Amino acid sequence: MTIALSLFAILLLIVLSAFFNASETALTAASRARMHALQEDGNASATLVNTVLSRPEKMIGTVLLGNTLVDVLAAAMASNLAVALYGQVGVAYATGAITILIVIFAAVLPKTYALAYADRVALVLAPPMRGLIYILTPFTKAIEFVVRNILKLTPGEADDASNILAAHEEIRGTIDLQAREGTVAKGDAEMLGGILDLGDLQVADIMVHRTKMETVNADDPPPRILDQLMKSQYTRVPIWREEPENIVGVLHTKDLLLALSRTGWVPDNLDIMKSASEPWFVPDTTSVKDQLNQFLKKKSQMALVIDEYGEVQGLITLEDILEEIVGQITDEHDNPDSHIRLQSDGTVNVDGTVAIRDLNRHLDWDLPDDEATTIAGLVIHEAQTIPEPGQVFTFHGYRFEILRKSRNKITAIRVKPLTVATGLAKGTAQAKVSRA
Image (cartoon, rainbow, N blue to C red; front, side, top):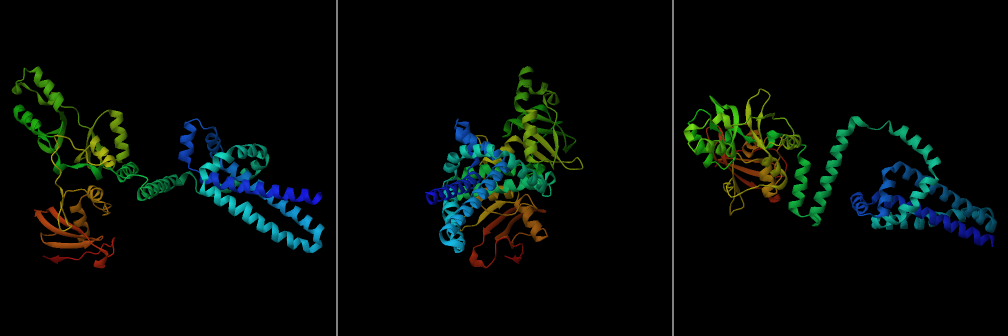
């Protein structure tokens, strides 16, 4: 009878050890997003899972304490039983037997199952684990005290930026993995990645450069200004005086038409500056995420971008930021986008002013955009010179041929991705120049 009770007690302790191991694996591997969604739907077990995971040090302390306790107890009882049956040599038998039982049935088997069905196991084991945490709280408090003091020696608030960056990279990796597996559509993955990129981008990276800005001269006759605005595809246009860089206001076609109606639809009686709103200037180093928040806060949709010397570098709109998330937004008034032209031979003809980010997104390429914003800027940066038409460069796994140039400005480039067969590794920055 005593032997039977001892064997039952040992078996019970091994089951408890399996419970602790399975709980630890399932609770740490469970999907926090799914548990949160289930909690929002009123699932009580999911609420307990989130409660347990809100204080991971308590859960870990309880698991370690309970697991160590039951394993040691099982080994001690097995040794006592073996000694009673076989004498001193029974210690060796007990050690071998209890090791095999604990490794297979209390560790490997429950951990493997818990890892394979983490969410399901976590929902089942969270309630009893929550109870054990309460029971063992006095002991785990002591463990928490020791752990907390040791953790003070590890990176803290000063490394929060690094921790946030690591979290972003983990999320980005998860999105890429889900996209490759087909769980997340490619377009959805790009939008999620675009949201993560907002904090890394500055307004200078996505602004409309001043050379491409559509502006009007405040000193032009009102009929001419009105005609220019009616022909424009934009509803908001900066207005300048004396020199194009001296922006003195922003004209909105709705405000201008309202003012025109008050003059009896006589353009010559318009006071253009009375219809213009104050220009809003932002530094070119402002992050895109901060600028988006400012747009929402000020209920404005356009800002002029200036450099450290106060010179206008371009403009940014709310639509520019949204396009970083959802891709190109076009309407019936937009001109067809012909800046990126796919050729039958596999090459791509692009205007020099095309943004590298747009090209990467459109063609699923990975050209670097750290040192330059436009494709022409990338060529000039890598070549360390202003190239002439006909010159060919190879870097970062792509071949660049200069097609057209206007003064010191590259206006058209032919780009071709290189295959592995060319012997050029992607990502190298070595430039080779030749004459066509």
